[in-house]
Amino acid sequence: MKFKKPLTHGRLVKRYKRFLADVLLDDGTLVTERGRKHLNTLIRVKRAGMRAVMLYVVQRMDVRIFSPARELK
Image (tube, rainbow, N blue to C red; front, top):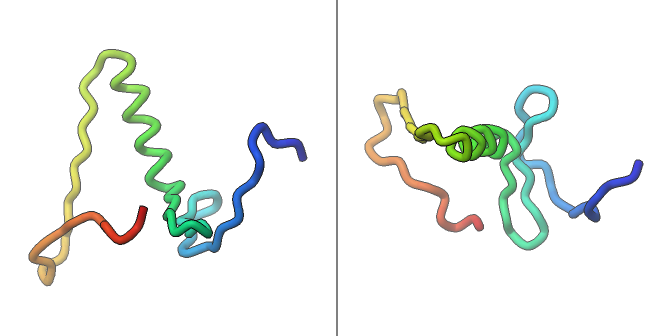
């Protein structure tokens, strides 16, 4: 196969369905293909002149706070 960009080495963290996954790169960056798909859709919506919003809903009774994983790049 021919790729436009060189491939990057990483370790599979979690797999979702067939083609979506979280991969930890050697430099510590966590690449989330699952999230990237949704963000790319929001970017296209925004570029088309529409409003784009991210909403996080945590449906667990034992959670008091929700924050990004700041230790990951």
